[in-house]
Image 1 (cartoon, rainbow, N blue to C red):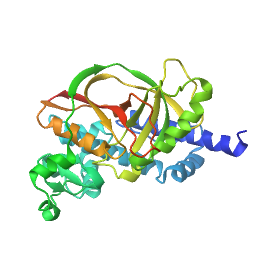
Image 2 (image 1 turned 120 degrees about the vertical axis):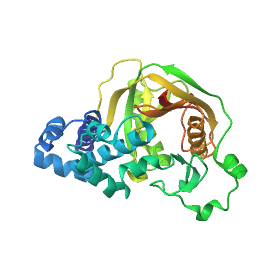
Image 3 (image 1 turned 90 degrees about the vertical axis):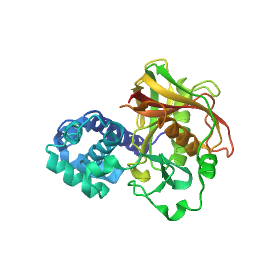
Image 4 (image 1 turned 135 degrees about the horizontal axis):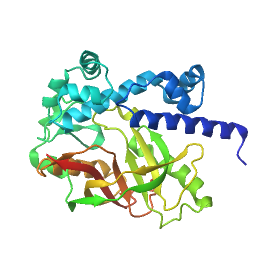
Length: 317
């Protein structure tokens, strides 16, 4: 039986998740501590302490980080927008404030950042640009290790052969359990979600589809702060409870790559999707990327094969 302590913890997680989602949806607007506290139904003082305790960041620091990281994504993915437009779209009150914050965060100006090679993620935490140059997290070239890899080896190590096509995807309703941190640890969130969903007839092993929604760009956000949602697709209305929330994953035009992967192959699959962009005539659009699983996700089984669609929102260049 669930204890009072466990119920209380679940309620606090639910309220803080609700605030984090609210910040993400209203990132272009001024957000005050009182406003966010009202979303959580806490006093401002209590909310500030609880949010900081559960997330490791103050509400202001979390909001500012989301703003500047969203700006970095727009700078890379939407060349048609000016720096000023991006600054105000991300909720900065002035261009000078945006410029100071951007340089402090990334060590370069926004214009310098925009000119750098687009990072392609690679296995074991290594980052490559689309031209095959080894780069650091902020996009700086790092030639020291590149001499160890030839172009043929690069292709074999970091890309896969698969069918990739652009599709129109529908909106999808899901229940979710939020995970923050390294990708390979999201299995814990799926295990909790399945245990909660099964007795409510929301999960049937072998039949219910699942999806991992990524809310942050790991080329911009430190891996320890990348937010993901472990999700189960549903076809009926569900009341959220504790750390188990509900949301609609917006559909639209997506590039979809179908893969059969072991647990160690996901970065290689994502690299393949990034490589596709360089010759596609498309760029990444606003919206969340996600992995849609067509078989049971069993992350605890080493070597398990996943039939998965990697889905990224796109728009023409």
